[in-house]
Length: 165
Image (cartoon, rainbow, N blue to C red):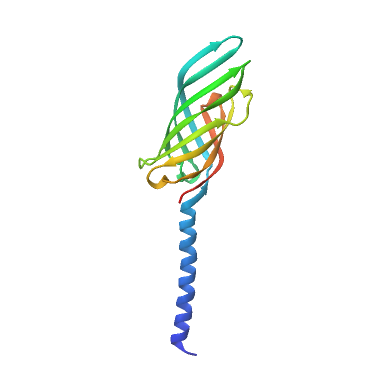
């Protein structure tokens, strides 16, 4: 048995395994799923229209933390716009825009909308779509989903997917 030949075969095998491991690590940094929690504080104005229509327009601010504290919504601050139309005690439309900022100062711009309408005012299911980002989030694509209680104060991040170039 040729020792030189065995060494080449073993080193080729090791490099192949190393390539697979590094390829998996870089792939994990480019794609992911999102679950976690978020909390918000809203401020805005309510306007009543007859008969029985109420429109809220304002901003809300919040924080989110994902499982593993990574991904686009991990340990992030939120600054959002919002508008909700309520008729007969139920939300018929609710949507807006958010800027999400992580601890490094990288930003994600996204749009959100309530996905189940009409619905009670104390719960909400929403979907956010990533529009653009800066730094490590440049070129982000994907979405997240929320399920909120207490009028949107406490939200579970129930899912979503993101992809970075």
